[in-house]
Image (cartoon, rainbow, N blue to C red; front, side, top):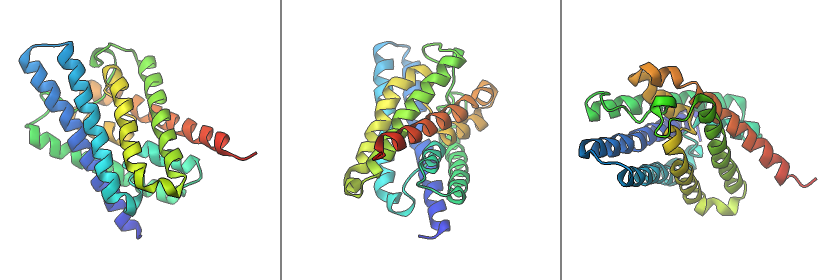
Amino acid sequence: MSDVKKCIAELIGTAVLVIFGCGSAVAANTLIGNAGISPVPLALSTLLIAFAFGLVIVAMAYSIGNVSGCHINPAVSFGMLVAGKMSVRDFCLYVVSQVIGAIIGAAILMGMVGGTANGLGQNGFGDNSALGIGMGGAFLVEVVLTFVFVLAIIGVTSKAENGSVAGLVIGLTLTLVHILGIPFTGTSVNPARSLGPALFVGGEALSQVWVFIVAPLVGAALAALVYKFIASED
């Protein structure tokens, strides 16, 4: 498969992830805010948003997975690089495509919701966290969530016989980490997904976005190193 086709696939997949995943967050939070009610509806919205992100991954995995592998996430690509499953050249091409896709997705989402008054599903900590978690806590949460997510991806894609179910497993794992992470940080585990909305929202979303770029990369690297160790036959 040509590099151009792989890059286009990653761009489209990341854009779709931002539009549908972050879009679901905007829609759910706006509806609950307008209704003026919380605890139970907020818990329900967490599930709805988590499944939206997970289902996007399932849809993209079975549509572009055979083209690019459906990383649509710089942290996943970084994990593959550290695990020795991807070249530095391909990693750079993928990340550029993913970031461009996330920016395009955020721009489309902004057009759909008519601006950024209700946000674009950006990540945050402190006053921008439902649980008020601080910067250090947010960093740790994102490292742990990304570690679990990338570990599952590397594990399920390491055996060819898992090909038919890999997309479903990865999608459900993303749903799982979102269920825990949304109240803490909104759940990133994806630097591109965080950067795209933050660029348009600006303010604290943009000043805090470094956490959601660095922490997922750390979590992905740890997952790759741990998998290489536990899967080795030494």
